[in-house]
Image (cartoon, rainbow, N blue to C red; front, side, top):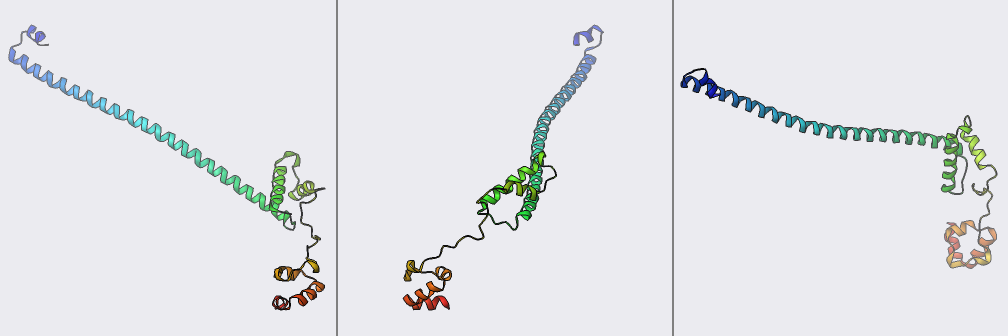
Length: 184
């Protein structure tokens, strides 16, 4: 550049002045370039962080949607179970396992398109028809101790309450103090 200015027949002082000014401009431009490169680097970093935040947001959003769906399904299941329980309210099953199995069978049947229009009561009757040993027998025999089998020292209040008249008379003769205690 200096040679070019000398070719224009400028004096050395003017050339030095022009070169100094040119140096200042070049330095300012280099500073601007460095500043812009730094800003670009920062933007790239922020862009990566924004992508990470977007991924986290999407994951959280999916999790919230799944929880809402699970909650809705659970509420629907609770309502269905309560409706089925209202049909079964007067039924006495032999145990909870049997009752829960029947409830689950009814739920499955209600979801089947082949049972469209059938009520839980209708399905219950279909499912339990001709099945035995799922309900408590209201006429079941109570196992009561025989008069001969009663050992006076091992009789509980519960055993005493199950005794008939003859057993109580025999018990009173064998153990009058315990008989008096149980009759109080």
